[in-house]
Amino acid sequence: MPYTYKIDAYQDVVHVRAEGVIADSEFVSISRSIASDPQYHPGIRVFSDYSGVTRNDLSAVSARLVTEILRPSSIARHGVLVRSLLDFAMVRMYQVFCDMHESSFPCPFYSREEVLAYLNHGVSSGMVIV
Image 1 (cartoon, rainbow, N blue to C red):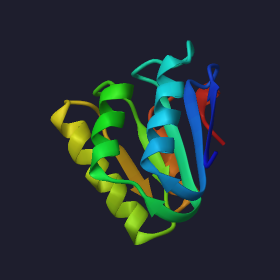
Image 2 (cartoon, one colour):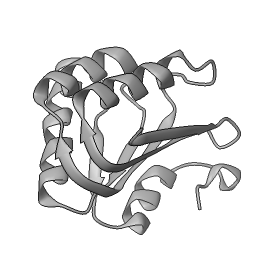
Image 3 (cartoon, rainbow, N blue to C red):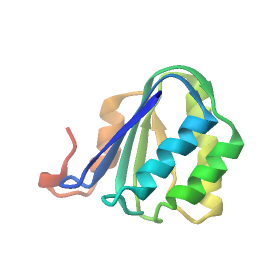
Image 4 (cartoon, one colour):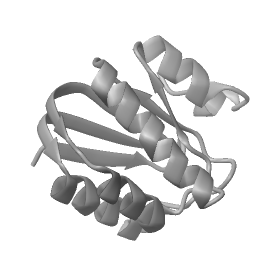
């Protein structure tokens, strides 16, 4: 499976990793798994690492559906590490659906440091992701 995830309840963050070829069915499947995890809640921070993606076959259909599945709160932070302009644009498209649901939206970045700075902004020192 091209997606894996792990929830760190202590730091209140979901770590998602995508590798290889990603498509709608896997994106929806991992989102359902995350949403049904007892440690998940709509305000949790999410760090999605798409740096290992070699081909992105995601569509607007899955982006809309995933927004409805995860229902992130308006204050949740979701940073996405991307390597390509296509992946950056897909995150921007996902933002539109989040905005339509009055949810927080993911922010794409090209470096891990930028993602971490975004996710760690305003959190206590014990919850800083390294």
